[in-house]
Length: 275
Ligand code: NDP
Image (cartoon, rainbow, N blue to C red; front, side):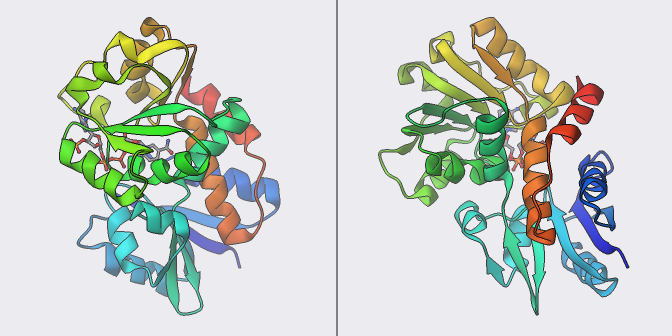
C-alpha cells in the first residue's frame, strides 16, 4: 500500500507540494499519495485526526497553520522549537513530531544552488512572520555575522529577535530607519507584501553594495516587486523562493522516507513553469 501524505493550509489549491513530492517519489521508487487538505486553524485538529485515521503518517503544514501545528505536536525538533512553528509533521509511535525545514531549505538553496557563502555576512531580514521565524535561526547557524530584522509591525521583529537569544548578533530595526544601518551582503524579503493591497515601506539604496545578493522567499509574480527593486538598486544576484520551496520539501521527504532526493530535476522543471 502506498504511504499517505498531505499538505494542510488555507488557501491550498495553488500548492506545488503534491507535484514536488510525486516527482521525488517517482525518482526514488517510493509509492506515495500526497494530497492537499484545505482547513483553517479552528478545524485543523479534526482534519489532522481524520487524516491520521485514514492512514496519514506524514504531512506538511503551511499558512495559516504553522503555529497551530506546533501546539498540536507532542515533540519538536530543534529547528521547530527555535522557530516556534512547524511545517512538517511526522507520526512517531503515539504522537505527532513537529519539524521545521524552511530554514535548512533556504540555506541549502543559497549555498548549494546559488553558491553564496553565508559565513561572515551581514543579513537584513524583512518580515517577522512564520517564514522569517523559520529561516532566522538557520541563517545564524550558517555563520552569518549579524542579522538585522525589520518588520512593518516593529513589535513582531522585537519578539523574533528576543526569541533568537543572540543579543548583539541578532537585532531589530525600524523599517523606516533602515538607511541608518549601512549596507548588507544579503537582503531577504520574508514578507507577503506583494500579496497585500498595501505596498511595503520604501527601501533605501544605501542598503546595497556591489556584492549584495537579494533573496525573496516568494516566487512567481509575488517575487517581482522586490526583485525588480533589487535589480534596479544594483544587487549582484536576485534569487527567488522556488529553490527554497524544493529544498524544504526534500528535507521533509527525508524525514518521512529516510532518503534525500535529488532536487535539481524538480527545480529545473518548476523553473520552466514559473519563469
Ligand atoms: P505571515 O503571514 O506569517 O507573515 C507575513 C509577513 O509579511 C509579516 O511580517 C507581515 O508584517 C509582512 N507583511 C504583510 N503585508 C505587508 C505589507 N503590505 N508591507 C510590509 N510587510 C507586510 O506569512 P509567512 O511568514 O508564512 O510568509 C511570508 C511569505 O513567504 C509568503 O508570501 C509566503 O508565500 C513565502 N514563503 C515561501 C516559502 C518557500 O518555500 N519559498 C516558505 C514559506 C513562506 P506584519 O507583521 O506587520 O503583519
